[in-house]
Amino acid sequence: MDPDRCPAAHPEDPTPCAGPVAVTVLDSTRTGAHGCEHHGARLLASLDKGWVYALPDAPPGAAIRTFKAADSLRPFCWLDTPRTKPSQLSRAENRARQGR
Image 1 (cartoon, rainbow, N blue to C red):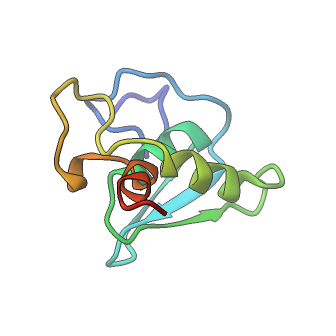
Image 2 (cartoon, rainbow, N blue to C red; image 1 turned 45 degrees about the vertical axis):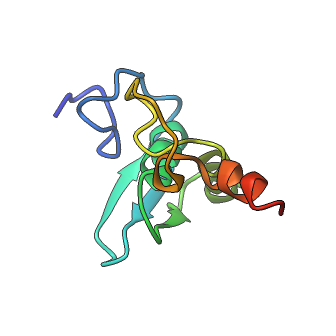
Image 3 (cartoon, rainbow, N blue to C red; image 1 turned 180 degrees about the vertical axis):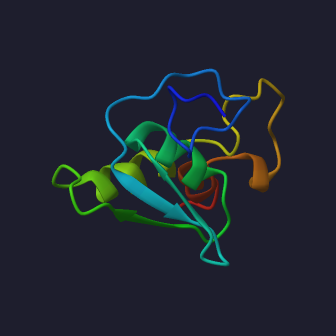
């Protein structure tokens, strides 16, 4: 792991951290990783039934900003591959396809 990147940053994601470690992202088994809001959102978007919590010293609104950002991100958004299946699209794209 790169010591200059937060634990939520996927090794294949080339983007730098954006701000301090502010959130914890948990998967469906409640295993988690701390991360900046940017990588927290990218991780959350890649999980099925994930959760996000602000760390005690996080800026106000960190968890909701991370949650909202994840909604429009595709899972594993750093991969440049064709995406047509619902599991490959963002939650927002899937809602739009369903007319909601």
